[in-house]
Amino acid sequence: MWDFFETVRHRHSIRKYQPDMPVEAEKLYAILEMACAAPSAGDLQAYRIIVVRDLAERTALAEACDDQVFIAEAPVCLVFCADPTRSAQVFGERGANLYALQDTTIAAAYAQLAIVAAGMGSTWIGYFDEGRVRAALKLESGLVPLALLSLGYPAELPAPSSRRRLDEVVSWR
Ligand SMILES: Cc1cc2nc3c(=O)[nH]c(=O)nc-3n(C[C@H](O)[C@H](O)[C@H](O)COP(=O)(O)O)c2cc1C
Image (cartoon, rainbow, N blue to C red):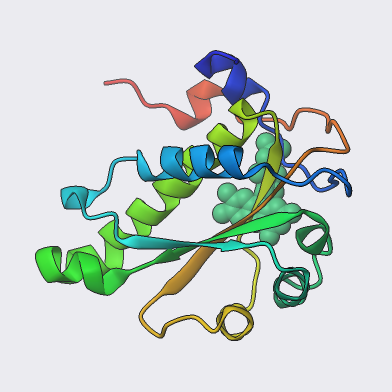
């Protein structure tokens, strides 16, 4: 098991997956538990995580994401949906418009790191047609899909991506 800093450094977007290596159920549960360990406003966890394993549904998702075919190739796709109504019940508009989105994306970020720690890879997918994702998953009308994570065993080791320098993104006071 890697330490946290190694885990973060080893996370790269993976867009090629081992076709014959399914994701073990116990690892999938561990990843979902880590996602749900993320902080959330008022501890409400205003999100739903849809675990998509069915090939026909993964294919429909890939099509809804402008034909990003690796989504169908990965054995699992996690779809992180905000549940604005849940947060609004306690926090009103701020809950619906801000906290539910933050809850959901933090959970997805935790999942992405847990995936690396579990020896697998993922890509965060934000480029999709919301209506087509909704239709592919027959989503409840109150849920808002925010991010998809393709998930599986990597079949590539991408070169590390660049980052802006710290002094460009950090202001010290
Ligand atoms: C909000 C968001 C949306 C993204 N959407 C896509 C996407 O639709 N397709 C894709 O292949 N990668 C997508 N990515 C992954 C980024 O391209 C990737 O994280 C970035 O290039 C840095 O590379 P790295 O993840 O390997 O460090 C997205 C990432 C984020 C955070």
